[in-house]
Image (cartoon, rainbow, N blue to C red; front, side, top):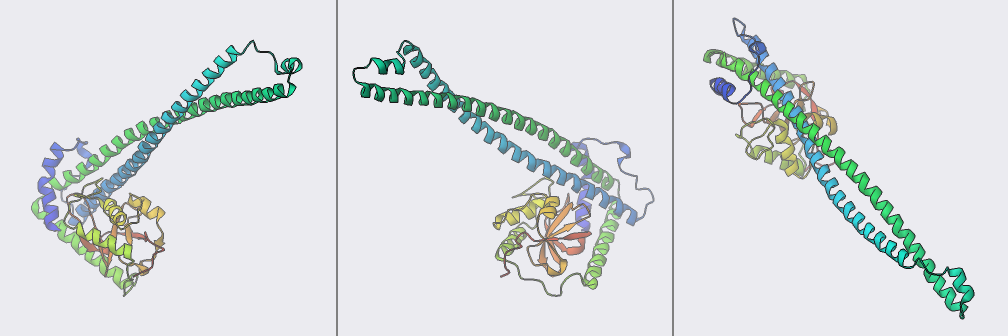
Length: 349
């Protein structure tokens, strides 16, 4: 832990100067004579704000992906509608020419009266009636094709407007993440190496105490449940990513953020799940901590802005935060909101 914080502190000033947009000078309080506990509280708050902004960015990114797919689908449908309209107009043109060429024809009734062979005239009248019905159908198809083409064109324009709106929101969300990360790096760069080491030790002690309290409370079962086949695959995938760096908005294979890791792990196990930790918490079946089995997801903080994957024995694998790597951690590394199970209907092995 101390090594990770120290690396962050050493690179913070450079990163802030070269990679991120500037923020007001009063965005992060001066260290001054604050205690280690106060400094850690500020640092953890900034990390949470950065992760919250990251998950907001991820949600917008997912909406933008879906919107782009919808625009592509409507563009394809519009091409087909325009082709159908072209064919219908061609048929209508042929119909108009036929009507013009036959405009001097005697009416079917007069033709029947004058015919030497009334049966032949009746047969001919039947053919004429058939042609009339076909003409009506041609006009109907033209009208329907025009209506469909107009409707698809309106939908395509609306979808494109939505895509542009989401793209603008994505840029705003990205800038917000960068600002929050700048706040983290600004605070770290203001600390001495000794303060960074003290922060790391203090945080480690806090996690150990929280883990001991959680186990003593009886919230966890003494015996972990058995994973399902899919849960086992998800765990093995997540563990294969150990040591890879955290990067906000990343879904692998070289870098991950917290929900990017869990979503990819379960996707590789054959069970696609939502991309963000908020959606994983909102849409996946919830389970008591007592029933945890490897592969389940543990969600953290009141607004569900962080997530890790349960390994068993009170441990999770997670992509923690900026400057750190995918690692195994105590389940109480952060305040627990609850747990969800992506494969609720799958039996344990």
